[in-house]
Image (cartoon, rainbow, N blue to C red):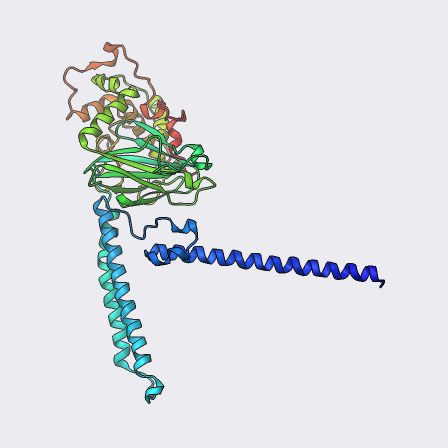
Length: 458
């Protein structure tokens, strides 16, 4: 090897060594900075002010270490249970480690102690089995009570259907006949770092869900595409949204205000951009908001014209064809499935004794729902819609119902078996009885048909 080649290889080796050592130093600095940041966050979470200088700049942010202030009875139970379990764990920790450290210190070898020589102790084994069992039993009682209260969605005062989309929420006030979409309203400039972050950064929407204070609200939660989860911590409600299934939860807000949450299930690249906002109003303010929303959607005038009854006698084919549309659009398919077999707590309609029996019990169930179950009242639908969906489920799958119900049967059932005073027939008023149901015809604020709020499982 000549001198020139020898010098070249020596220079290459020195450069490689220098690069390798610089890379190692960079990695060490990076790991130190990361460890400092993590340690700083840990200290700030514990509220240790003295540790703040050790933390990196971004780690000095304001961290919260407790649950949100509860605003419902269930949320209060969760909060109290959280505090109780934390205290129990802290007492166990102090007791166990205190005895252990005392034993190590007081019985050390330098003081002349010798280890005891025994194989087993029945008394000790009984004690360390019974005491943890009693502790767990004491913890299980309030936890079980809280879980049972969380699941008791019976006898709701209002029902809202919540549908998760990528990446927004749909709210359908099924008893009022309207719905809307709720999307993130944080300006793009804030997200891109071109403006200062607002107070409710990524936790603000254009159309919040609005409910009255002190009212038991049941939410029927489903999804249109992938898994989502509807979560509002201050109200103590969290429910998975699963395509093709309907899950229910409930809450009763104790105080008016605005309460925020997020989707709590990883649902794609914009999972962090679908916040939840629930605005709780006084009952008087809620009534004003509801009247304004109905007027904006043209439902106020429709309600005023509700005394016009539909006395037309429809054929079975007409009712079944229209009933299939209502079954899809009004949410029936989300609970009872497209094949009529039901899902989970929702009973099957195929072969049901109720469906194949007399018409009066079915009429009563559709109008009034069934307290203590997930079956809601559908009296917000028109009489024609209800008669049509009854005909559809009675003629579908293996059902062979011949006892049809006409719209006028539902009109009478709403009014104690009689026609409303001063009511006009559809023929006399000149109104059309073939209009599409509100739940089918109305579009949400994004222009999508509302039947998309449910995606049936095939």
